[in-house]
Length: 344
Ligand code: SF4
Image 1: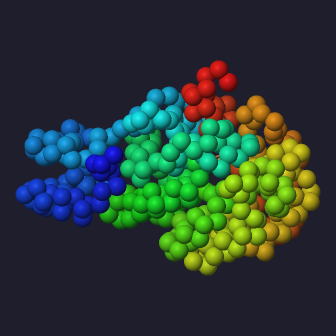
Image 2: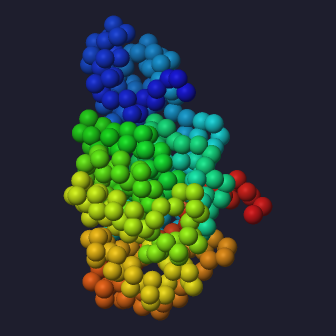
Image 3: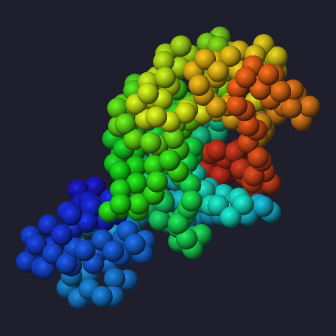
């Protein structure tokens, strides 16, 4: 991939590019307007540019290479898209409309090296990282599917985004810069499985992005039964990195907690989680598990309510994720897994 992606190339660079080809700088501005104001990256659609300029763009930048190849909707409007990349690999993104707000859930890697035991996305491990241009194309395909820009973005799709830090940081810059897509960093959430080196780098950006930690267990022993050793960090180190993030970014961190019957849903787990959240000034978001047909089960409604009440009784701010897309192949990675392993 020696040619750059058009999306992700800044307006300033596009103006320099125009000048370097003996074109007036405003041609660069026109191209940037197509990409960042209209969300259009195909040069043939840039109809205020002379044909030779459109051809030049086609020769010097990568043609958009990602396409929607399958969709799965559910009755509540949530829609999951299977996207096929230029090299034939697949990722997923989800469009989630709720109360007049639209959220996109984006992927950052093809497959995932963390391989949490309850997650279909990690089943085959990491295939490769996504380039920033690919993540931005994912964003644009969602915009074109929805017919508008999202209000919120969450990087909670396939992959551990902080293990692809350079491309993720470049993506966040384009999404949030006024010269790019101009989104408020507060409306962009990056989720991590607790990859501490990435959390420390993310804190050093000192930007107001939202950080969500997929903790899933308040203690190392329970966590070790859910997340393999190779990329699992001690809870104490994860929480120290969360403290740093609060200091540097000035944003409260959210602890995401997938509730799995019989694994992490007991009263002692709830009390420990509540205490951890209060001590580190974090919010808690409980996610009742969506079955992938494996060894894990979703707790009963009663058990979920009792867990929530126990966390709240510790003094923590706690919410339960509203279930969306339950009737579609909704859990992270399931659409892609079905495409890759049609017999499973
Ligand atoms: S839950 Fe997230 S970090 Fe864990 S395997 Fe799935 S995509 Fe990777």
